[in-house]
Length: 196
Image (tube, rainbow, N blue to C red; front, side, top):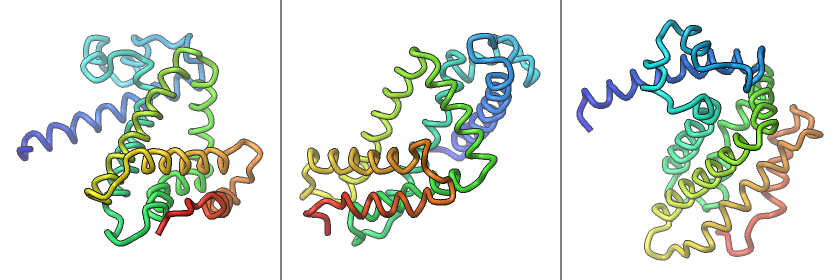
């Protein structure tokens, strides 16, 4: 990618982040269904037409943070030491989630967005599709790390198991201060038998 392409993408991401933050505030204050694209555009000082240059719909705005999280998790997984066991690399790739969960402001924000998603069958279906894509992305990153010896079915199951641990640790009854230890305990209990 050229330097201009990189700069353009960074600039685009910055605008998308600004739109997403404004939209999320409106969704929390007014409700998702009650918030219009015109209101989101006005909140960031742009036209509806400009909004659609960055997002295809307000649904995409809600799901944007999951896409960014997926990119972050995949990048962190790819950056783990080559000799590290896959299961341990997956746990370390979840560090951004642990960090967000440990910050009360981020945690409250994420919980509000999750309530919006859970309250809309359309958004929930899209969210689950994105979650599936995120798991595929991590499976691909893990497959590249392992190389030719990789069994894609086993690695896919491993990623799914790691996400099940993440979900279990984030269950609403979990004490936020215990999220990281709960995740570690869950992942230790479900560590694959064949994991190095």
